[in-house]
Structures are given as structure tokens and as C-alpha cells.
Length: 290
Image (cartoon, rainbow, N blue to C red; front, side, top):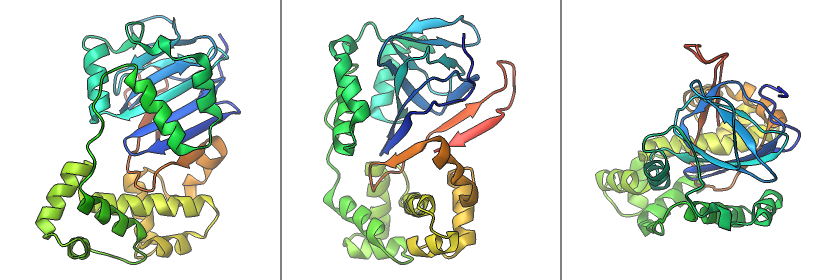
């Protein structure tokens, strides 16, 4: 079995939405690792191999892997599409309940996934339209579970998000509350209920995402910090370490390994991968947070 440990291959891309990430790549063989998300894997051409500490290599055409479960994957010189779902999302919880009630890894033979043609998956890989990609990934999930159409956000929360995104200066929660004619406490409550995280966390995360785009474009760190509303480069540096696990000065290296496409201005989803040297390792040798 060919071992190209940790190599994501020449062709790879990561797409990031609110609560969902999707990656496709080819020609790699991973060390034992785990993600803090629920993971779906689909082969585009033939099959891939999976194993964990208690099983041998097994071939799959599609699979679902439990959140934080340690495993290895061999691409088998084929192409795979990976979909990562926030473990707290409705989609992830329904998928876990249906396919992983007493398992850590499961094939998806009992689903309707085989009704989706290979050409459908291949078209997704060459699409550059984020909206079309997102619809495609939802179609895949819809073939796995029955889910209701997401509830439309309160217009006041949509307006609050827009105000945060478009602000070119330091703002406080009170400024946002005044802008949408809500009390501060009511805004905090509604935002957490509809968006899934505290408004203050979202505000910091948006600065990180916006500055990340500037950093990857080659903008000086101090300039990027001021442009998105951080107090200074030190403030941005602390926020990166807290949310991404790395400093802005080192994030540039990911651009050479992986193409990152942020498909939503309101994205606030991250996922973490921990890579271990072997099955008995107590601590990861490498952690990647995107």
C-alpha cells in the first residue's frame, strides 16, 4: 500500500460555509487522525480504504465517521469528496443518530446515496460557483436523511450580521442593538438562538476571516489588522492564536498546501484535525485548525 503520509495531492481545495466545510483531494495516505466534526467521505471513481485502532483496512465507496474518532484513510489513488459538518448542527445530529448509533465508522449502503450519479459528483469538483456547490452538498445530505428547510433568520439578525460585516471601525454590541432597534440583552439572546454562537464571538471571528483574506493576498499584517477593525497587529495576533491556533505570520504556509475558498461572508465555522504519530500516542503531533 503506497504511503504518502499527510500528502493532500496536487489537486485539492477546501470550501467553507456556515456550519459546513467540503474538501476534495487525491493521492494521500493519512497518519492516525481525528476531526472535531462529523465527516462524510465519497469516492468519485472507485473506492478508498479506512481503518481504526480495532479494525483492518476496509474498502468503501462512501462512509460516515463519528466526530473525534481516530482513523486512517488511504485514497487508493482515487479522488474523494469530504464533507465536514459542525457536530452541533441539525444535519450532523440526524446523520449520527441514523448511521452511527452504535458505530464509529459506517458505510452508507442503507441510504439513497447510490441514486446520485458519478457525473453529479464530478461536476461538483469542477464548479467554481459557491451557491451551486452548496446546493449540491445539500442534495447529497438530502439523500442521506430527511431534513426540514432551515428556518429563515429574523430580519433584525440578518441586518445585525450585515452591520457587523460592513463596519469599517470598532463597534460595540450596543452600537448594533441601536442600529436594529433592539435592547442589548434581546439582541444577544436572539443572535445566540439563531446564529448558534454569542454575538461577541461572531464579531471577532468575522475580523479573523476578513483579515485572513487580506493576509493571503499579501497585505502587511499591521495594515490587514487596521483594515478589518482590530486595535492593532498584536490584537489580531492574539485573536488568530485563540481561534485558529496559529499566528497570522504562519497562516501563509497553508496557502501552499491547500486552496481555501470562503464561500460565505457570514462564515463562522471551523474544523480541527489532530494528527497522531501512532494509535497509542497520547497527544497529537500536529493540529490543523481551519
